[in-house]
Length: 215
Image (tube, rainbow, N blue to C red; front, side, top):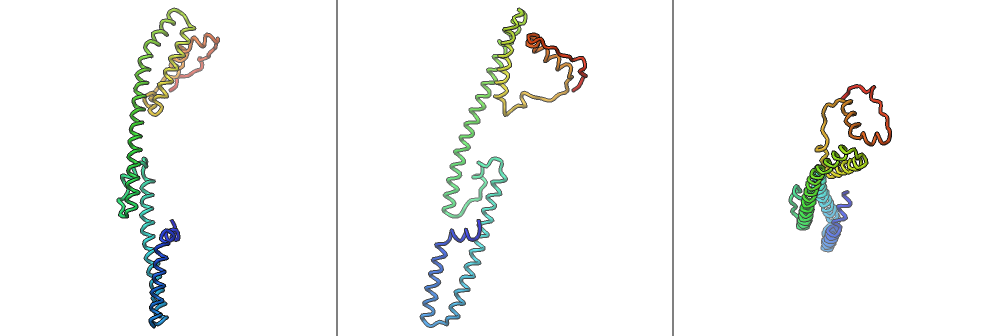
């Protein structure tokens, strides 16, 4: 906010003061007070008033910048109502009250949504872990009976269930991934074993003789 913008907000007060100053100056000159003395008083009053308004502007600008810095320094800006300095003006107190009510309402709504999301995630995780057991049993049965068509479809269902669990944990992927040292050839063999039926169906040929052990 510039100084002229600040003055525009106080234009009514400034115009009243100028009008009052003009009336006083007119009365002084009307009753015979020296004109030069009256002009000097007018200039002095305007200078003092201008200096006062400038100091008031600097004070309000610093207070406004302090609030901006507080907002910029918060990661969760909806907590701003709890850290704002307590206002002294009646109008600002009303604004602060409205802001606190709005922030409280938003925080309550965020808490409700977070709780519902947590309940949903726990439900999905529980469902996935429970459904994996019959899917695994079916997969093993079809593997033993060499029913590779149904085995393939069962594996697809298993992957879809795993994908559902992944999306349910999309904000907490550390539950699904962890870093450890692995043997590259062992990983490749496990993947080939897992998808052997699909590879055999497509008559895929994989050359792993040149794979070196890695991490």
